[in-house]
Structure formats: structure tokens, C-alpha cells
Length: 389
Image 1 (cartoon, rainbow, N blue to C red):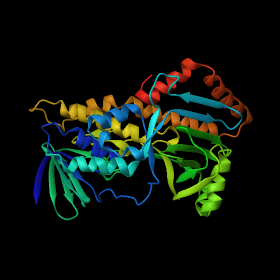
Image 2: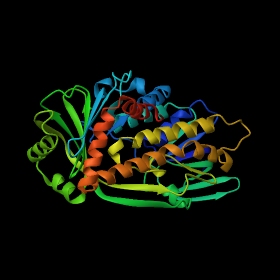
Image 3: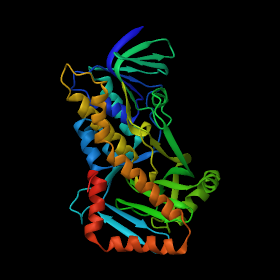
Image 4: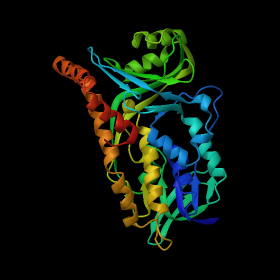
């Protein structure tokens, strides 16, 4: 079986699906190749994301945000960041003239709604379950062979298949991984006191602990911590984990009750030599992986999708979407923000993992100084909201 498309997207996660939906009004025919459809959880998903207002606007333009279950979404109005030696930094949407700093919601909630949009989209063919087996390119296009023998012909192949991207390897694009020797431990809790739409983050000796508000008196925890401590947390029973997490946050929200079992995933920084090649482009985690302390991972992926859709959707009919000159326009647009976020989060992680007393004093003084300078603090908020200062 041979099918021809303008664009084949390998990976139907948040970045890949949002790219396909963003091309709904274009003349391009699109195929999405994914090994399994999104699953519905019985309770709350363990993996949640902080979505910036800029990306909420993006999802709204896609017609996705309006259809999400509002009862499973929580706005962040304030954020409190604590250093490991008395430093503190506070962010307020109200003080900055904003409606929200971010929105917290489950990854699965967004992905399921994106897929519902894809199913209704006239120019999209969903191939699921489907697993790529081989990829070759020539002057006229690319040929993607699936494990079941189907062959897809495309003028452009987009790798949206995660940090271990198969497409990236096939394209011969080098990726350099820097393991942090840390894991991200995630779990959801019911807390004894109202969080009042506040996100909390602590820079501790044993890692970076974040509590993200969910609807009601619920919070989602992300604890980025050394491997040994992560394994210790994952081995705790529910009661012991609740007490450990509540105590680590100075019981700021009272007693905790576990809603979803803790899960852990390895943390690493990934840099790629380039994000485009002839007939190929990378988006999302296939193009960059950063430390989760900034909460910007999925926001970078959405902006990749927005930028690539903008380049491809605006092409005249005679222009080939797989031309390297076309793809370089996308690469230029997305060259700065991911690199800035990678180096910033990497530097912050290294700074707060250093036990030097002089550096400890300096970093906590820096938090307090920034807290005392509204102009600087508001500039940081503007970047978090808009992706630019």
C-alpha cells in the first residue's frame, strides 16, 4: 500500500497533534503516525503541565481550549519560590496586571481533545496503531515504511516522537545527552488547606520540590531529586510519602492524602546539532529536552508547532514544504527560546546543587534582591507569560 501526503508527522503527542490541528485550514494533506491512542485515566493523571497564557491562546485558536473540562483545570494566580537559605521570590498575576500566571492541567486531557479535533479534520489521516520501520529521502521527497508494510510518501517528515526520537536518528541528526543523575518524582495529593491558586517551589538540599495547584484542594507534586533519594521516595508507602512531601514543604498546605501513586522518570538535558535536515524537521522533545524546574517543556513544544505551522501554512501553492530553505525559516524562528531555556534551567540546577556556602549565600541573596525589585520580577513574569521580555 502506498499513500502520498504533503506532510507526515511521526508522533501524535501534544506537539505533533497540535501541529496537525494548526494546519487544519491549510491546503496540505497530513498523516499522523502514532503507536497508540491517548488513554483515559480513571482518576487524575500523574503527569500535569503548567501551560502559559500564550499557549492557552494558541490552544484557543485551535478550537481545543474551549472544549476542555473546566472542572479539571486550575489557574495559577500566585507563585512562591523558596531558596535553601532564607531566600524567597514571589510572583503575583494581580500585581503584574495579568489574569493568570499559568494554567495547570493534565497532559491526557489536552491530548484527548487534540485527537478529537484530528478525527474531525478533513485533511488529516490518523494512522494508529502504526510503528515506523524505515525512512529514506531523495530529491522528490521521503518514503516512510511502517512495520505492517505500508509505505507513505511525503514531501516533509516531522519528528514529534519524543526525546528518544526515531526520526532524529534516521535523519542522522546528532543529539548530546547530559544526565542529571536525578529523577522527577510525580504524584497528586489532596491537601488539608486551600492552596488559593498558588504554586510553590522549594530549592532544597535534596532537590527541587514543586506543588502545582489543581481544582479544589488538590495539588500535583514534581520533586526533581538525586536518583538515590528518588528511589527512596518511590519505595515509601502512601502514608509515609504524604508525610515526607508535606514536611518538605513545611506543611504549608496542611496534611496530605495521596490520590495517585508516585511515578519517577529520569532527567537529562538534550541538545541537538540542528532541528532541520532535507525533508525533515523536529519539534517538541525531539528537538530539545530541559530540566522541569522551569515548567516550560510543553510550552516550548507548542511554540514549535505554532511556528512550523505558520511557516508551512503560509507557503504559496507552488512551494515545496520540504525544501531546506523553507525549513530553515522555522529553525531560525525557534533558535533562541529553547536554547535560552536550556541554559537557564541547566545553570539554575547546577547553582542550587552546589553546596559551597558562599554560593549558597549569593543565590539566596539574589532571590531576595529580585523580590525587592518589582521591575525585574515583572520582567520575569512577562517572559513566563509571553515567552519574551
